[in-house]
Image 1 (cartoon, rainbow, N blue to C red):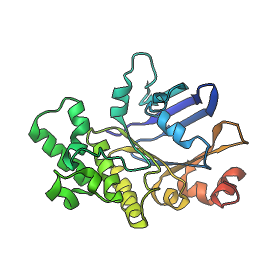
Image 2: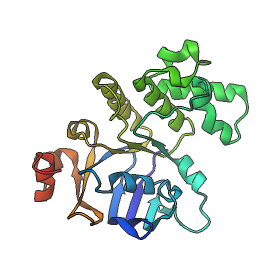
Image 3: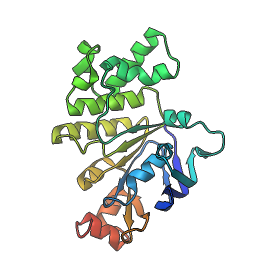
Length: 258
């Protein structure tokens, strides 16, 4: 079941460097929220903080709160592995496990969670590939390497892998930046379908993509070089793109800076 995710005064650091400062943002269930802003403004750092991927980087840390339906995922005793099971992630470059078959790529997370019964795995793999709109293209070659698929197919395979463990939230870090226009539209269509089941947060530099797929858009920027990224404005996507309340937002979406 999709869940609300909320950050309260979130700050993200790389050692002593403050990269993202004081972000308070609520992301509602079954919506797509787009994070936009110039390069280096902390969008991807913020995204990785939402499922504790940020702390994997040596010296990186987070202060403030990240709440998943009011439960702080950074509270003492919370297992980050369980967090990442609830809050899945799809990265910028398609990254199927190169030595694994299509089937095993999708089943990998389930097997890590202790699922061994073949019938259960079969059902989950088919369901996830169908949900990723990939089943009809690969059903006859599930034993072949996932790395042998096209770029767009690989990214949909990665989405199938992420949703196979039934997360509540799906994070997507520029999932279309390495894809051609046709594959990009396929991923966008897929996101629109998946939001009925998941809460989706996407980082994108593509303003048209943000306007096409998201319900809510959050604009991040930096005041000047060396300053941390900050959340400047968040609003209904149509309203933000047609009538932003902040001049910095308007300047960015109209191409005057960034």
